[in-house]
Amino acid sequence: MKKGNLSCGLIGLVAAALSAPTLFSSCAETSDVAQNALTTPGNPYLPLWEHIPDGEPYVFEDPDQPGKLRVYIYGSHDNLVTAYCGRDQVVWSASVDSLTQWRYDGVIFSVNRNANGELFTPDSLADVLYAPDVTLVTAPDGTKTYYLYPNNQCGGRNGMVCKSSRPDGPFEVCNWSKEDPNQTDGVLRFDPAVFVDDDGRIYGYWGFGRSYAAELDPNTMATVKPDTEIVEDMVSGMEQEGDFSFYEASSIRKIKDKYVFIYSRFTKEGEFGLPRSNYTLAYAYSDHPMGPFTYGGTIIDGRARGTDEQGNVIATATVDGNTHGSICEINGQWYVFYHRQTGTDEYARQAMVAPIEVLVEEGEGGKVEISEGEYTSEGFSLEGLNPLERHSAGIACWYTGPKVAVHEWPNNTFYGSYVAASYGTEKKFDAPYSLPDNSNPVVNNTDGSIVGYKYFNFDITKGKQDIALLLNLTPEGVDGTIDIMVDSPWESRGGQLLGTIDLKADMPKTLTELKVELSAISQLEGKHAIFLKFSSEVKEKSICTLEDFQFQCKR
Image (cartoon, rainbow, N blue to C red; front, side, top):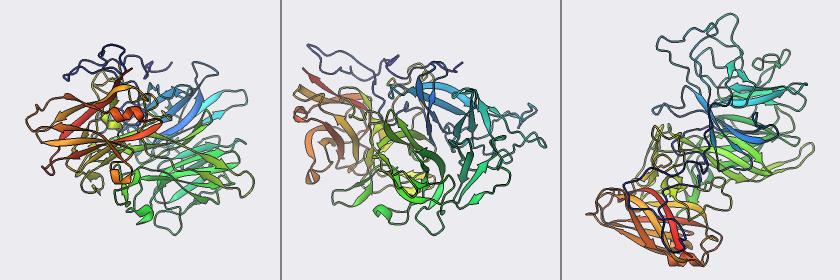
């Protein structure tokens, strides 16, 4: 049975009453009606209290609804708070026909006992698990076995492999050593990726700074196939010559007749006009599962590259961090799955997604071209977010300050706006997308800060009357203004000022909803970005904390 039946869509979205003034529904016929619900997840696409980095997406058959397909996200679990990842791995899934409604399927794996059932430690602590991968083996009779590679970080158990008859587990270790009950047999190490080819042969990939690959023994799914060898430096590493610059995060896909290797790449100093960083996912491709590979390019940049008012390249989101993920085709549309950083360190990462295009030239020597995804607030809402639904401020895809933030691993020092980490309340599983839980506040909104959202679908408000923005925030005792801009933060680069909100130093420091008329929005159509620009005579002090917002109109 599934370990949870928690529908993460429109069920149970009405939040508990807030201390803020009444929130208003959109386009009321005659009067405004209270509505305290978030109804569009946006990007991150999972609830904002959940932290699933390193996501590997796979489309598998729903074991409870044969013939129906679901997308399953397998990642590590940032619940240690002060360090990477956690001591369990969970899975979320969604129907391929409803990608904005994600269901929590529960814990799929955790291990604190050895092959004999004895505790590893007196305090019963489970092993820390990093970025996993999953693969499916289908027997001639149709029996399905799912193999989980949990990336166990305990020495002697790094190559751990687990299996289950269901994609949502539970998974059990299947490669305990016969010589030592505290160890497992297997060649795979850091950030494993495993792939079953069309001919049934199985390949594994791993590495940190250097990349490795091997054909695996199908009898163990863990050890090197007899009479074959490990391939070292399958692609060039971060300190080696070559464009690949492999760092970590191995992932493998087969698209038509091409093998596509996705990984975290260390950029070169000055590449893209920015400092060196491993906050990108890149790809390489080959006609053969273990190469030789050809470097393809960048699939996503977690820094959200953009330009400032003078046209200089800048990071418009967190300036540095790590990322890990892969690509997946769902209903004919390709996506790149990755993660972003929240808070001031690298220990509260969230699952992100962006649409991409994948073109394959079949035949020996054919090219693979993958477009670079755009870092946005949309998630799976490819037509743009509904402006008339309430959104957490934390889906911001642009947050910059008066000075560039400083990254000193694992910490970031922000001089302006950033998305704070949140972990929800004890009731988060009851209504995962409700306001009290599904919210990342945007904090440290100092003079010169900019917060942006890409994109909203303003076809919905075209020609409507009395359009306003309802902004839910907490004033912080500073006189200041918030300019609402469309398309760009600067008029000199095509932006348009829609309206301004004034904040006064004597305003109560409590959650407050402010309303500003934005009549010009009625003329907009299609997708547009919205930016909030913060100004104050008081420097280096936050003007307010942003909680959530929505647009309002009347028919």
